[in-house]
Length: 129
View 1 (cartoon, one colour):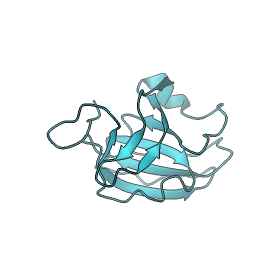
View 2: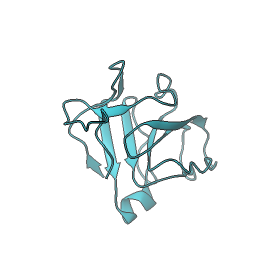
View 3: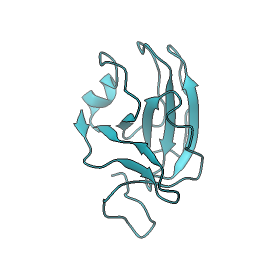
View 4: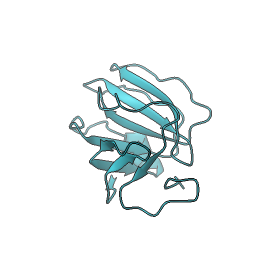
């Protein structure tokens, strides 16, 4: 997995969502996801793109899922998805953040996320390609 260079923040309030974000943006990285990896530490996230649905098969711990559109606006938050479950299909989503359970407590639908120090688009956030 590739690590992003900057922390992920909520742009309006400035809350840090994840200090370390790993990006899964090709078929093999998306297919593997977190399977076979140690659980995410608090403050870490896996950003899967594109993605509109996720599963927690083979995951040892529950996850918080944050579905994002192309402008990194939160479209749905699924909290505390236990192992061996499937998330809802989120039609408006383009990507997904997987975080340890409770790490997404400050995230709400409609929030706009971005990377600290990254160039932003006119819409106010770094877009997912």
